[in-house]
Length: 470
Image 1 (cartoon, rainbow, N blue to C red):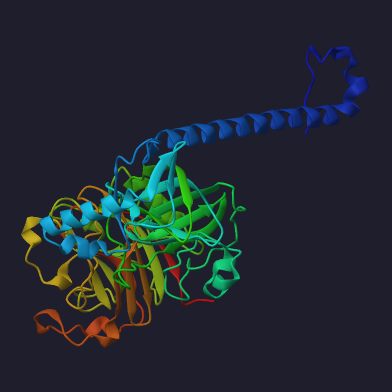
Image 2: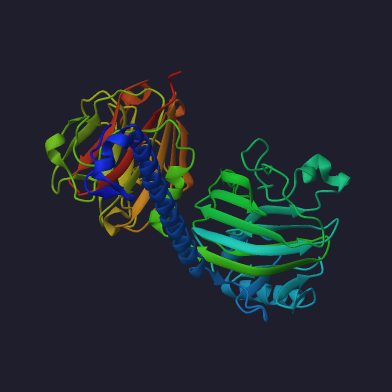
């Protein structure tokens, strides 16, 4: 690279040009380094400023669940199923709650802006319920104590004495923070690392829960990474769509403070789920065109916000050009009120994917009144006409939902907004809606796509990971 000096540069006049020609490359390199260094410093400062601004906004959105002086906003419940409590008639339930609250007064107190329990009595429970959120708190306990934090009314993020050899056989030596009531072998049951501080010191706890997906940090160490938390009260089921935060206590004094929560909106929740374990996923939609897609391309369009949308009053199957055997697909779905569509799984490109493909996974506005009396196997996430999905986990019409579908062999699993709503082996299905057989359910590969039904349903951020390749 060469440049010409004109006038003066750093005090060097033009008539000195010939004498310093040999040095120009060095000067240029230094000058370039200064420019780059200046840009890097500026970029780093901008990044740090943006990060600080984001942190400030996040911190500002937290609100306290404990006012530091009273038990306002709390009720008391022992280890008792919230499902059974809800099934009681109103009078019986109110009597139970009053009884437990009276008992709690003997064991809970407030001092120095701390919630203090003597290790006995019912647990403190928020009167409010929460769906997707970030929870922060601090606790301090004593040796041989055993406690925990119930999420959405379900046990629990474990707190215990990691030095007690009597409980090493059940995992105490691994430390606190694990989802201890998860079945053996489940991710998250044991913490990833021992991060407890010594007795007498405060421990910092942070929990992020999206649906049943739970992440836990203990004293700034991540001990649970986006693991599914099992529903202790209804084993194998997703957690309730929403529920209370419970502070469990037994076996010894425990103190709590700085208990605060931040509710997480749909866009942030979707981004969080999409970022977790995203290795190996490849986009099959560029956000601008239908390149890479085939079939009813004229019945779909790409919106200004970068979504595939079925044209109003149009239908047909829009399929990937690629063929997939075992795979995982992640995407976001927005349903208009009363919207109807479907996900074609292993389609051969012909006929109705509900029957000719391995299956059609229903995409439907479950809340629409016109769908109130459908067969259970017709609601959102169901393997249409074969296996019903669980309901109650869909966001309102007009809101983006995050959905993950895993197809392996003859099994199909659907996770909606962090909750597994379908986990079925289609090879075991022998009864069909309307006694109509599904000859395609044994297909081992095919195209993925959308089965439009005349409604402007939208899809975006469509990514697929193959499971059947080395």
